[in-house]
Every structure is written in C-alpha cells, then in structure tokens.
Amino acid sequence: MAEKTKRLRILLADDHVTVRRGLKLLIDAERDMEVIGEAGDGNEAVQKARELNPDVIVMDISMPGTSGLAATRTLKQIKPDAVVVTLTRHPDNAYLQELLRAGVSGYVLKRSAPTELLHAIRAAAAGGQYLDTTLTAGVTAGLAGKEARAKMPATALTERESAVLRLIASGYSNKEIAAHLSLSVKTVEAHKANAMRKLDLTGRIDIVKYAILQGWLNNA
Image (cartoon, rainbow, N blue to C red; front, side, top):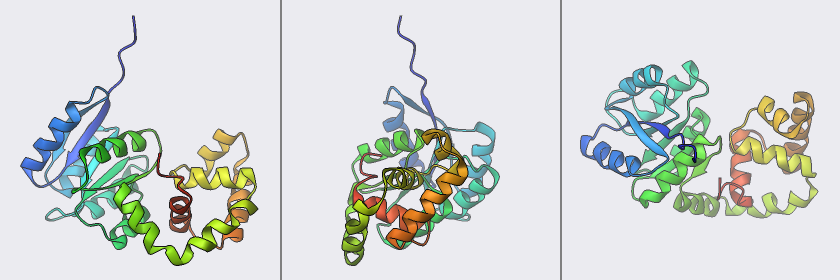
C-alpha cells in the first residue's frame, strides 16, 4: 500500500477575509497541502506562526498595523527557519529588494495565476526560492544594463563556484551548502568569495539578481 503523502501545513496571513477564504479553497484543493491557520494582521501572523509552526506562511504585504514586511522581519528573528511566501499587489523592485533582505522564500503577485502561488509554496517548502514569473521578467529587464556583465563571466566560474552561488540564491546557508556538496564550510566560503569577486557582486541580493539573469530560479 502506498504511503500517504505528508501535506504541507500552510498559515495564511491577509487582512481580507474574502481573500483568505479564496486562498484556503485553492490550497485545500491540492493533495499535498492544507491550511492549518489564518491571521488578519502581522502581529497575529507572528503569534500563529509561533503556536502552529507551519511549513509555509503565505503573507500579505499590505496589512493594517504591523505590515507583512515587518512581521516577516520579526518572524525571521525569532524563528530563523520560518518559510515565508509573500503575496502582494506591488510589482516594483523596491518591495522585492526589501523582502529578499528580510529573508522571504517566495514573492508572488496577487494578479498572477493561482498556480504561481502553488509553485511558490512548493518551492519554498523544498528549501528553494521562487519569484513570480512576471516579476522575474521585469527584474531581468530592469537589470538589462548589468546583463552582459553578469552573463559574460559565467564561463569563468568553476563548477564548484557556480554550484555554491546557485545554492546561496536558493536560500541555503553556508553550513547547508557544505553538507550538500560534501565540502567544509571554509571551502564554501572561499568558493563564494572567489565567485563574487569574479562577478563583481557585493552581497546576497546581487547573487539572487545574477541567478535570475542566468535563469537559475525559474524552476526553483
């Protein structure tokens, strides 16, 4: 007899009851996920996340009181392993930058097809990172001036350096990357430093941008 697939436990945080109901219907209809709780604002989202320990938190950005961004920052401080997928109507790069800094694993636009959110939840739960496909295109276009610089040196990276950057862009820590690649943490840090120097990258945000331009996150 086949084993019953473990369902992903999802917490919904959105101040609109109608939106939450729609999301709950969408998620509960999937065989591999279920909604285990709901929150109407950022503070309640943090409280429910601590109580329920969900696999993924789907967080609206614009909520009264404590915003989704502030709630995400708080959550990542008290629960560094919290997995947050943001759902927003804001397509601009400023929101993406701030949320990536806050540690989100997914960024989905409310205007996109429902499948975008489902893909994001699955990718985030698996330890990856997912950016809305329409947003990815926009970010890539916005970085057009850097595209040649980003793509040209790709061949200059060693296989290990490329692998380390891919995993960093997908949200893995140096320790997790070391275990995944059977390397020491010190060696991972060296590969990361070498790759960033070759590509003239200054931090994790730049690494994620580079990954977008290379198409690494499209199927994350």
